[in-house]
Length: 125
Image (cartoon, rainbow, N blue to C red; front, top):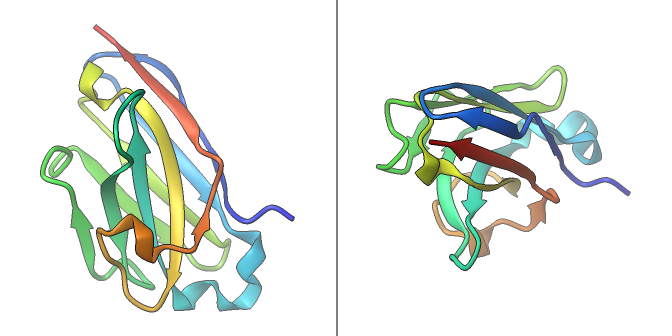
């Protein structure tokens, strides 16, 4: 059964933009009770926090490296969460993962119990 499914990754030039999507059919009508987050992992690196939002994204948090460039949003009617990425740099190259946990968000990946399989983002210089 699909837990979370990311899409929207690809190859983009530095300075460009991408919009990642994550669908969460597994939660059905309870999706709004889950905090959602995006993490990323570059080759040879630890998986790191990127962004997170509360049940309606009224509260959000971003990693310092993406603040002002990335925007997390969600559509609870569609069980979807998005990551709008602007002004991309080669340092943003990574596999991006969507994650979910009940109630409140955190930057700590170990607290998330539902993950997608990831979508690759490659930024060329």
